[in-house]
Image (cartoon, rainbow, N blue to C red; front, side, top):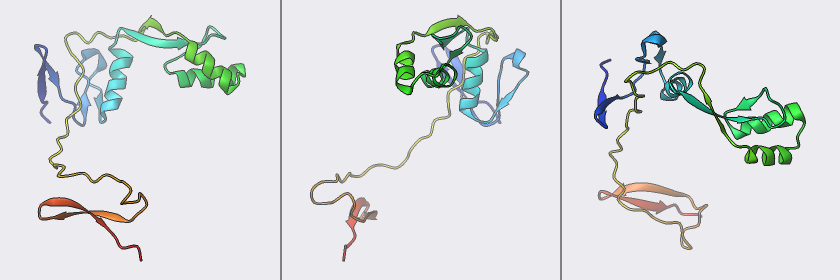
Length: 154
């Protein structure tokens, strides 16, 4: 598949597609079928620094998310859920140099392929006093317009 590109700030930014390969030579052309997998790879290997939340109870552990830190505090240090949440929420992020960093050179990460929606919303019917939320309804096209049809509740 031919690579499409989008101009951005004087450089050309590639558009992600299935079987996209990392253009960095040191990555040996590894392929990615999903955009989020490639972006995780980019953050892991092609970003100079990473942000972590260090454990306040031990020196060996740090996590990427507050949820992981809360789980660590509960399982390894026997904090209550409330105490773990309070501790994790009060923890300050530390920026560390990425030991796995591989310079991307002039390459920049791709953008996700855009999806264009061609449908046009003709009108919106709001749920109000006259149409209960639990009433059985259907959206139907009549004379080129979308109409909300309320089914008879006999």
